[in-house]
Length: 187
Image (cartoon, rainbow, N blue to C red):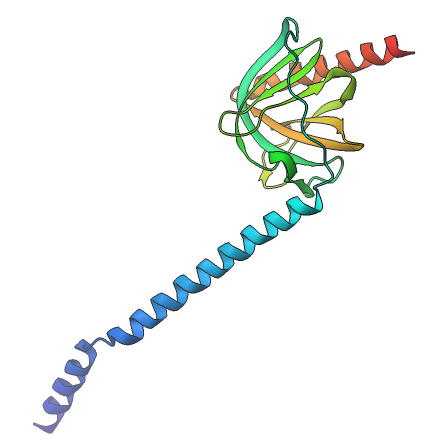
């Protein structure tokens, strides 16, 4: 009988839940998550203040001209040119969003619903290429359209992904051709 009494007492002790201990752990975990989120947000704001010397983004001209190319897709962010992990967050350039791109003779119009739109004048375009990554986004080789442009004395890379990735080569060719034509007339 003694063995059955011990087994019954052990089974009964396993059924008792330490609710205070569980609630304490849950509250502690939630506080830790809140702290990590707050630190991430402060880091983002600090990065933006370090990049505060970046001037306002140019707006599209009244009459940019006829569209050479247009596409819809995603804007994945901007980085310092050649440094794919050095994200630019100032002036809303770090905000991912849907995008509508339009290439005209005047430049590249970037319309972002829910984020700040901007315009890249043709004379500030420096190049376009297909790449696999930009800060926070890595895809298969050639999965991103990277446009290099100059703003405020800095060269930036902005990453876009079309809803139809087969459009990317036409965009790189059109932008690079436009840049070469602009450089040829400037000389």
